[in-house]
Structure formats: C-alpha cells, structure tokens
Length: 502
Image (tube, one colour):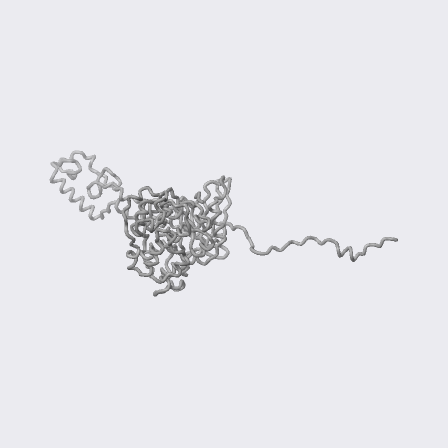
C-alpha cells in the first residue's frame, strides 16, 4: 500500500515557531547615572569620608545631595562598608528614613591620573538638627520638639522592625526639610541583626557623646537599646539646645553619665561589674539619679520620658514603640503638624562650623595687628617727638631718647625706625614692643566636640560643641558622613569610609 503524502496543512501546523523574547516583570533597573548629569551648587560637608555637595539634576531640576564614596585604594575594590550601606538603604522605605535615589559615577582617566568616583544621591534636605540647634535665630518650641521626636521614633520603630541597627544616632544625622519632615540619615555604621541570636558586634560604633554606658564598658552583646539611648540624648539636646553629655574621653563620658543617671549597681545595671571596660570606673563616687530633677523644669512629661530612655540597664530602656505611647505625646501641648512648623534659612552643621571658624579667624587677625593711626595722629606724634628731642639732646636731631638711649642723638642712620607690626623685635606703631601671638590666639582648628565623628547623611571643636576625637570630617555632612569615634579605639561615624566593623 502506497504511503500517503504528508498533509501540507498538518506539516505547517506543527513546524516550530521562532522563539519569542520573554517579557520581564517587576522592577525596572536603569543602572547608574553620570556625575555630569548633576550641576554642583555648594558644599554641604567634608571629612575623611569624602565630601557631600548640594546639586541639581540638569534634566529634572530636582535638588539632591551627592555623597562621595571614599575608596582609599582602588586595588582593594569597592568598600564592603559602602556595599552594606547601599544594600540597607535600597531595602528601606519609610517617610522618616532617608531615601537613596541614585548612584552617580564619574569614570577615571588613566592618562590624566584621575581616579574614578562614585556618589550616592539623596534628596536634598534644608537642615540637620545640629545646624538648627546652633542657629541663633532658631528656638524650638515644645510642640515642635514633640513633632520631631514623634517622627524620629516612627522611623526608628520601622528600622528595628526590619531588624536594622542604626548604631550612629545623633543630632547631626537627623535631616529636616522646610516642610517639617524629619529623616534618619547616615547608615554607614548600620547593620542587620537578629534579636534572638545574642551575637557579638563591634564596639567601635556610636559617637561618644551619644554612646550608651554598656558600649563604653565594652559590651559586645548589645541590642537595639543602643539606638534608644541616643534618641534620649537627642531629645534632651532639643530641650536644652546643646549636647547634654559632652565627654572628653571614655572615662569622662562614663563619669558624666553616672552623675546624671546614678552610679551603676547590680540592681540598676545587672552584670556591669563583669564587663571588660572597667579600668578606672571603680574610683568613681556614688552618684544619685538626677534625670527628672535636671529636666523637670522644661516639661514634666518630657522629664519622665527621658527618665525611661536614659536608663543604665538596656533591658529596661523603652523601645521605640513603647516611647510613642508615652504621655509626652498625648498631653497638651500636642505635637505640631509638620506642615505648621516655621521655615528657616538653610542650617547645616558644616555651615555653622564654617561661619564660626571665619569669625574666630577675624578675631585673631584683629588681636595680632595693632590699629593703624590716622594721618593727623601720626603728624601730631612726629611734632611731639621732635619737641622732646630738642629739649633732651645737645644738638637735637629730632630723635626720641628711647630711640638712642641718650639725648645727644649722634647716630643718624638710626633715624628711621621700622614700626611694622610684623617686626617681632622692633617697635610697634605706638612705640612699644609688638606682642607675639599667644597660644590662646591660635585656633584649634578642626571640628571639635561631637566626636564619633558630628561625620552624617549629608554627618562639632573650637566651637565648643563636640569632643576631642570628633573628626572635622564628619561634621556638617548629614547625608551619611563619618566622624571619628573617640576613646576605646573608636573611629566613629569616624575614620569614615574605611571602617572595619561587624
């Protein structure tokens, strides 16, 4: 039987069709932009972490903050700490947590020996809390403080619910815009944690002035309570308009904490005597607890909230969710609405520090240079000198006796004396010796007190606002700057950019 021919319709129906591209669903990744896509406007901060600049996107006009990621050596590759920070920021989404909106890249040029640079891009915020508190034209009201505290606790509750430790809570890392919105910034020291694991973590975290007592005593098994201690310090700082625990060393910091919160005992801080950082602590005097007495004059409910946040025992410290339920937020006056808050000129820590340094430099220059005499005063002095010379000298050559040591005036080559204030050994314009600059005339430079670095998301010294060990770098850079940690080998928000932490 002859084989039937293949049906053309069947063969065409079963012929393989060309592969079709699959449609990808979900997020759309567009890659990194170029630094040239942004127009640099002003510097917001600088330090060991790099620099933070205010910029404008050329296409959209959006104001942003560009934070450069510091790479000490390209041979080591991209910093693992920056990878961790970017990963955490990309996973977070909350109104009170700063948003990472872009990564901007600038390629290097081998011929010109120019290194490549990578910048994190954040929305521009008008202020950081430190800048506002240092601005003499700003006075925070109690409803305003409650508004900022409520937003801060909302953001911290979200972070802790996502199992993220911030580990650098301080005023300079809190960004505020002129719409009244507050954002937690600078996640350079942040990390994920497991509350049930009881893991050991590095103690080189948190700026000293905001560091809890367990970290100062080298406790490595810490929890989210370290962030809550910092929030208590920030709340008290807003009430007092200055840092409340400006320690100059770790031991001094502990002493200041014990003077305010009472000396530790096995009841107030169980297990404290077994912590490894006890050198010198046993010599401290027994202090009573004075938190409510110190802050009761500002507001009774605020003092009670601080009394429950600034607790030596981390297990008894309020959590963020518990703090939000405190009477402080539910009693008159109620928290203000963010939209009702006043607007201010841009106030960043870096701006205030730069202004203070300029003012101190002008003061030093005034002290070093004597005031110049007017022409009339100089002519009168010359006539008086000639008259005195003619009465004291035999021939009278017009010299003042102090110029030659006698009235005879025989050395005419000494007739013209240098009156420059720069001549350290000569005479001043008033005929007297010029004072050399004293040590007190010389500025300390640097950033001053808020150590840990005052580095921030965009990340205080001579100004009297921050502690020794506080890197000037951090200051003024709220978008994730790093400040150097003082004490205990701490290189805080600190030796920024090159932290080796867990």
